[in-house]
Image (cartoon, rainbow, N blue to C red; front, top):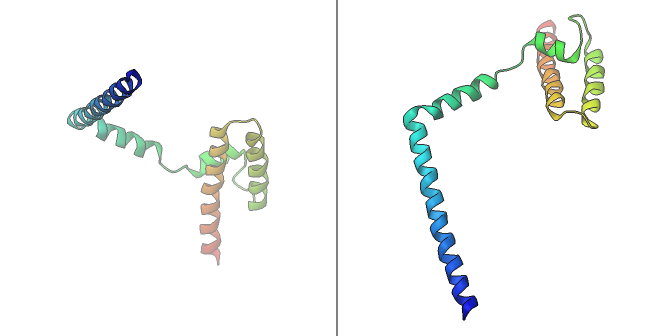
Length: 114
């Protein structure tokens, strides 16, 4: 009898708590929209997600302007593997983004010369 009563109290309490959390979340969203916090957060995300420049990519990989594509991929492989084994995921992702940036540039230059 006591176990059944305890179970009912837990079920009712969790339902009440769940509704309260949902209401608080909705109110927080309303306040954020009213104060412009949501728009500011979106603008910050857009600012951060801008593409990497060629100069930044070359600095990350430690290559010069006259490096060939095989040299770039070799440098990428070395840096990517170093950060894969006990290194930094952040640095590994920066190395990967640098290679993607330079790859797009090299593909465009190869299409232009073709």
